[in-house]
Every structure is written in C-alpha cells, then in structure tokens.
Image 1 (cartoon, one colour):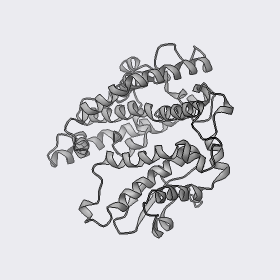
Image 2 (spheres, rainbow, N blue to C red):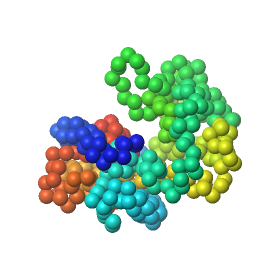
Image 3 (spheres, rainbow, N blue to C red):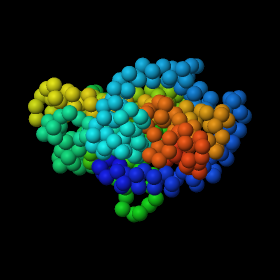
Image 4 (tube, one colour):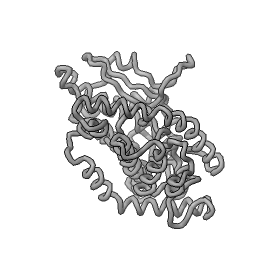
Length: 361
C-alpha cells in the first residue's frame, strides 16, 4: 500500500484484506457488542461507548472532539484538495474526480489514515531536494541501533535509561520460529520496579523510527510512576499517555536532531527543508484526525444501538465521506444504503476494532 503505484494492485490489496476480515467479523461483532453493553449496564453505564468516554474524564468529549475537528478542518480541506489534484494528475480523471471524495485505495495506507507515503506524488520539491530518511536510516543503523538511538534521545533529556529486563524481554523483530504473533507496536508495564517492554516488528524506515520513540515515551511514563502504589500507576488518562509519546515523536524529526544523527547534511533550516518537514507531518497526522473521529463515532453509534448490523458499512462510509472526504473504491455511501457491499464490515479492517481498543485518544 505504501510503495505500489499500480491502481489495480492497490485495489486488490485493499479489497482482499477487507473481504478476508470483514464478513467473518460481522457475524460475531453483534454478539461482542451485546456482551460489552451488558457489562457496561451492570457497572451503571448505558452502553460501552459511555464507558470509553468516561475514562477520558471530559464530560463533553463528543462536543470537544467535534470542535477540534472543526478547528483543523480548513487546513485539512486545503491538504485534501492538494492531494486530490496531484492524484488526479498522476492516475487520471477516470480514477480521481476533480471535486469529490478520494478513492481510499489510492492514499498510500491500508486505512487511509496517513498519507505520508504519497510525498513523492504530492510534494512540489524535486527528489534531490527531499532527503530519503528511510533509505538513510536503513543504510546507517540496525534495528538495535534504532532502539539505542531512542534510548539515547531520552537520556539526553535527563530521563533514565531502559532497564536490563527491558532489553532482555522486549521484542523488536518478528522471531524466526514461525509463531503467530501480533506485530502491532505496543508497550507494556508489568507492574514491578524494572519490567517494562516493547513489542513490535520494527522495520528500518522513517515511520518505525518515529514509532520506537513514541513507544519508548510510554515506557518513560511507566518508569516515572513506577514507585507509586499499583492503583496510582496510570496516566492522567489514555489520551495523555499518547500525547507524551507523540511530543517526543515530533522532536526527533526536527532539523537539529536529524543533522546530529548525520541524516541531513545542511543545517536543515532552508525553506525547502522546512516545507518538506511540514508537509511530511501534515500528510502523516492531519488525515488521522478525521479517521479517528470516524472510527470511534461509528463505534459509539453501534454501542448505542443507533446502527444495526445491516448498516455497519453504510454508516461507516457515510462518516468517512463526511469527515475525511474518502470513499470506498466501488460504492458511494449512498449506494451502500441501497445494498452495495452490504455483507462487508470495513471498520473491522482496523486492528483497534478487532481488539476493541478506543482510538480517539
């Protein structure tokens, strides 16, 4: 999805994953909703969506999230228009319209939540003006180096190094023993004084260089409150935990740090380099806002009983078109209401739906 520019191959991958995952999940997902809602009502909540919103300790979380989206919307619309125009120029008007939603399979990501891999199509800079950080990182550093660089970054800020158990028990690469292992990057606190771990199948590219720093931000947060009683060993809320990791994520891609690592040759503050950095961050993170809001708003509606199983897909793509300007490659949301792709459950293509993890944080 990140590297291919063949629209037929992209459609094959995008559709194949959803056909493999969606229909089987749709058979059991309503049962999961019933079980979760039953537990929520037993605890005094109307449904599981209310439990998730309660955890964030913001009484008006739905309105707050909608307000944040509206605040960023003008910039998102400009970014969307730029990407759509460049994709239309690249793939042609038969695949990308001049003023409609963008087909999801062309956006360089399995869920269209990050568009950073489209930089070669979208950027006004020439290839020689855009340092290929993924290539330079792969040439210069090993997987272990990635983790060590992240540790050194935090230590340089006066924070503690990783523990001996971290290095012994963490998994940074998929083992060679053919185990069926979830590779979704995650960090864990084992609630001792020194057992903290990261699990991920790290690839030596720009994206995973950011991810390992983000995950280690969680570990630093765990370590900061490790001496407290167990019941107090938690973040202010789950969103705050994510914000700590992403704060450091942004810092490592600053020009000064990239130059310190030998990844860029100049001081990094040329207008071209600044433009590239800003465009990279915009493509990587701004589309995530509409995606995250869609994903959890869809689940809030499902938990509350406002979306029946036969409308799972129609409701999902209605939100995706409304909030992100992204559409299913074969059916509009309106066509789905009339039965197109009615047996699918495309939200299930996302890890967080299968594992029942809130995303809006």
